[in-house]
Image (cartoon, rainbow, N blue to C red; front, side, top):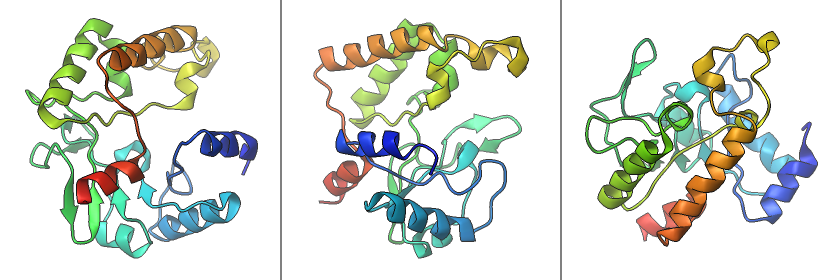
Length: 201
């Protein structure tokens, strides 16, 4: 609602729009449908995917009933105080009519390749983890936030150092290097909707 021109630009450039629910700090199941319908109304595009804030657990039937065809809210690893998903498949799987597309973790020890790893691991080590995932799974599902590319190291924000490390200009350089490395290995990029069609065909 507040950045329509940016979202419209991203859609024109070939990106996909999915739901992150209505609020980041609180959640009710009704928000699943409300957020999807509002996004479709605002941008005249089909919203088929969901990623919960903080990768919170969500009932798969509620997601399906709200009109989504895939959910990418599972981090199949163990994070103390957050979740223990060691028994969840590392790779995509179906639950009823809903496709679950977990975030990528390494084949060995299930080291998450999420945004915190990208900021805090040496880039050569992160590349090694990504290489292992691509070799084993034939795809990579990683995620970042827009604010990681901004200058958020100011003490006024009171953010812990492990969240602000390699953000801002450092993130832009690091991200460009990583994407360039993937391209040099002839890896291709696509939307979740394209991925879902490919694996279901």
